[in-house]
Length: 108
Image 1 (cartoon, helix red, strand yellow):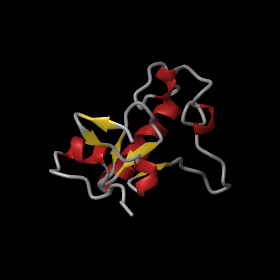
Image 2 (image 1 turned 60 degrees about the vertical axis):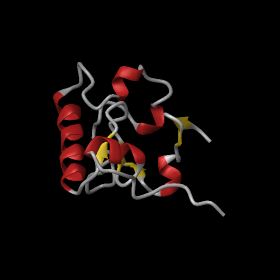
Image 3 (image 1 turned 120 degrees about the vertical axis):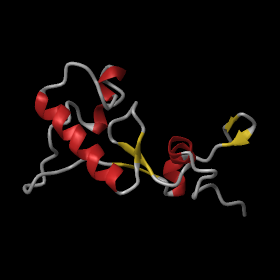
Image 4 (image 1 turned 135 degrees about the horizontal axis):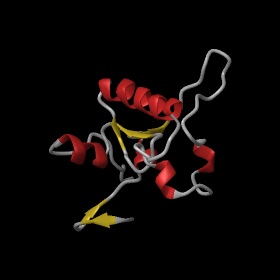
């Protein structure tokens, strides 16, 4: 298990506290975000950042839309990955100033 400052970290996707998400149009086509999530390992890391420089206006606008919709529901964006949002995990607790995460690992 990974630790941070001596405390165990639970992988956020494994706890249900994080999602990776895109928006699709009425035809099921992914909107222009400047890249597709599946390409994260083959594009420059700067392109993955929410506020990546030199995006086309449509991609920047779609990233802003995604953030505004999810943040209105209490999610927080992991700014190094425009598609990654947390609610209730350790990152969310850190960003929102919450005293603890809502989700974590379960010991059996």
